[in-house]
Amino acid sequence: MPDTMVAITQEGLLLIHGWLPYDRSISHYFTFERDTNTAISAIRAKRVLAGPFAPGLEVTPSLFAVSHDAKLVFSGGHWDNSVRVYSVNKQKMVAHIVRHTDIVTCLALDNYGQHIITGSRDTTCMIWQVIYQSGMSQGLSKRPTQILYGHTDHVTCVAISEELDMAASGSKDGTVIVHTMRMGTYMRTLRPMCERSLQLSVTQLVLSDVGQICVYCEQHLPSKPTKQKKLDLHLYSVNGKHLASETLLHPLSHMLITDSHLVFGGSQGTLVVKELFGLKTLSTVTLHIPITCMTVTNGNSHILAGLSDGKLIIIGIKKPSEVK
Image 1 (cartoon, rainbow, N blue to C red):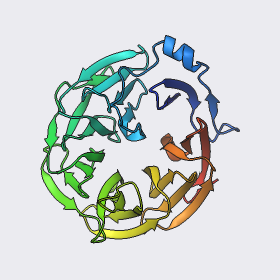
Image 2: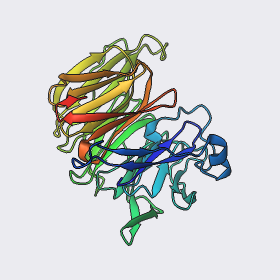
Image 3: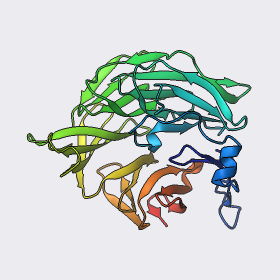
């Protein structure tokens, strides 16, 4: 996003900050201009994503995506099973599409900003085309280009890559299913390891530029799904080969891939950078407040971390293998 940073609160409030990306010729590295709208004035200006979210659904980063030109916000999680498109410039909803038969639980945009994949409680995933006019994003296709099947429980996370022709989805059924993006052809099912007495759910996944899939799983007793969880990271190759695993001590709230690194944070307020090949820890940054969401700027110059107390932390990336 060349000059705009879009932030969304748990109440669906939209904040638009000014942002000048990293440039080596600029002594202070970046310029950040905070949105001066207060919560009340923003609501009066209708800067709220339309419609309430589904009752009982946790509002997480996986419910939102922003077009690469920062003109549109795509959202799921709405009570009527819809995918919605909000225009940042017009400050209103420009599309309301209902094709899933249950709540949309997750969505993701591909690296080129051309397609979106949505996952739902109805156990299906759908791929949609982003509509452009005169080089600017305008909306979403009214019908999905592909409908993907295979899960037996709620879809919890999705990822898509146009250059690799891959669409991946994770589910409460403990599997990750990979399809081709263009034709919707089934490729393979990944089944992360699970202790015999426990039940496994896939809660997050990310897809690298070379097709590696990093999966975050939670194992729990079937009778106590919210207690005594075992937390694991698993790394798979583009061909589905299991490459590495790691057990975590604390739950993750968000993770992403940049260059050849995996970045994640969670409830303990620690941001971790790992080498994607082998999951070796390269750096940790302690923020003391639970991390709710993250993103990396174009050019991989900064990591942005949203915290549960409403703060936005900006962390400069000094070198590909070093965070400062």
